[in-house]
Amino acid sequence: MSDAPGLVAILAYDGLCTFEFGIAIEMFALPRPEFDFAWYRHCIVAVDPGVMRAVGGFTVTADAGYEALDQAQTIIIPGWRNRDEAPPQALLDALCHAHARGARLLSICSGAFVLAATGLLDGQRATTHWRHADELALRFAAIEVDAAVLYVDSGQLITSAGSAAGIDACLHLIERDFGAHISNSVARRLVMAPLRSGGQAQFIPAPVARTPRHDLAAILDWAREHLAEPLTVPQLAARALMSERTFLRRFSEATGMTPKGWLQHARLAQARLLLESTRLNTEQVAQRCGFTSVESFRVAFRKGVGLAPSLYRDRFGKRPPP
Image (cartoon, rainbow, N blue to C red; front, side):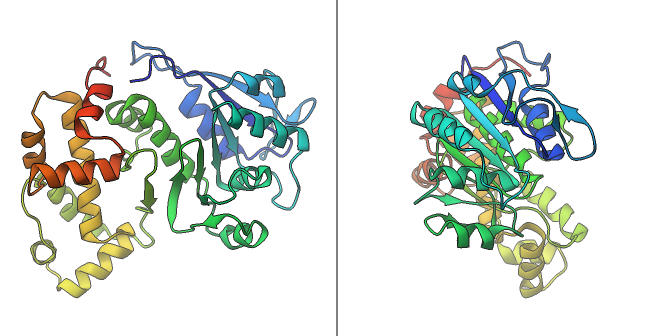
């Protein structure tokens, strides 16, 4: 766990995207009395001078100007007022300077266009709202735009898709700093499902249902309770009272993933929690999460999370209760 998560600078601008701004405030500025360790410090940084108007008719005043970006460990770009409007050069310069000294930059939705304008995303994979992905790719040809993910984490640069995907990206960043147990606790307070992510280089296939599939909810819950078993598509399809072909189609529609991919994410999520909250050894964790061998578990965990199981436990295994 991070001892000092540092200062989070949240950008505000005239024409502010209200929901995206609210996500950043909720995640990083809300008091967390349920935790007895240091949470993030935050400040609102003005992109424009004076009082700034937000979508919905209210106004926002800031705590500081660009100088605060020099102290920020994390900078949040909550959307952008107009994709066709070039961000101020002073802002782009400040973001580049912050990145050069090691700060993390996270964009929500159209905020990816601000990051793109800095040039920092050149040669990188990135995402934005699916409605604007083609435009981003056309205008910034050096960026590999992926419209099929909720967010992309390339280390210092995190881009998220449409507005609500900013919640997933912010929870992922919290997990990077504090581990899955704490990010899950934050998700519970938000009354939403915990983030199903890997580590710092993980690309998350969109788990949001494109069409409602309540008929699969019970099957997913059952599968989570039986991860130690060698679950198969025929077995899951039979429990859902569907043919395998119909089950695969509906599963993809509901989760955006294959059953194999979904089970891998679920098993890794369970493994992270066991490594954080129990003293089970690696072999026992692997067995409880349904991996066929300790070695296959280690390979899958390192690939999905970015750390060996032992290193993950060293970093996140000792934590205060939520």
